[in-house]
Image 1 (spheres, rainbow, N blue to C red):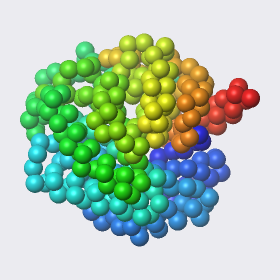
Image 2 (image 1 turned 180 degrees about the vertical axis):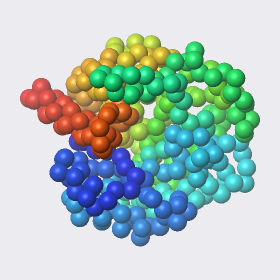
Image 3 (image 1 turned 120 degrees about the horizontal axis):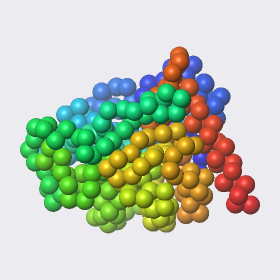
Image 4 (image 1 turned 60 degrees about the vertical axis):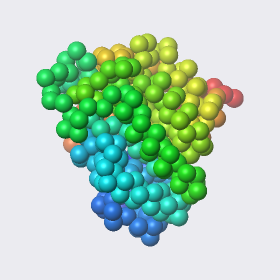
Length: 329
């Protein structure tokens, strides 16, 4: 396993800085509109990173953590329609192009409500930390525009997606890495009439059972998985072990939280409830061999705050990886 990170467009100078910081494996979201992606464009993007000694090994497809209506392929997980079918067909072409371009995998979300949070709080030294308190979620919000979708309905849509896309992924040897719905709100619960089965650990166990394939797995967000647990400080290690032993972890978002199901804040990796070195040791023990990536770094002050915050976490991950290697000898 090795350090990695994810990006939108980066200038050549920014790419050079990443190389200097030792981040030489990445996931990028292409800047072009999704329907304009081509095999040649993906190859050119890969070659651009390679000029700086960096491997572009994954892409984010337009099924992200935003509301379905803000994703170019958002109809895929809405109720059945001709547009859904057209978008699934084009996603099959996207998988084909990724395989032809030598991209290892595609990261995506199955969420139609998007990212749910309550007002931010102040963390260490005045840093801004992302927060979720289920009892403070706006319960007066209108029913979701596409209509209600309980767990049975969501699983019907998820299964349809898997049956359509995973055979294509197998043909072109592209890993499909599903990210949790952030956050989970409990098994069987709904918000705005919509269930979030892939916000919970049991949901991901069902996901990998619905279509058992080496190309159906997880963009394993350790933070999201922790958010879905009653006692993440103790439970997260067994969750890592469950999916890692089954070789279903294709990517890791390595972040820490304080709290648990229904009430948490996102914090710097060195100050949360999860023992991050112990977690990294479990990834190593189960034979995980891909990227360890920072994610959702708290907002800090000063110029270039985002870049400085991520640089801090790159350093933390480098040191953590070295510590785990030392402990394993």
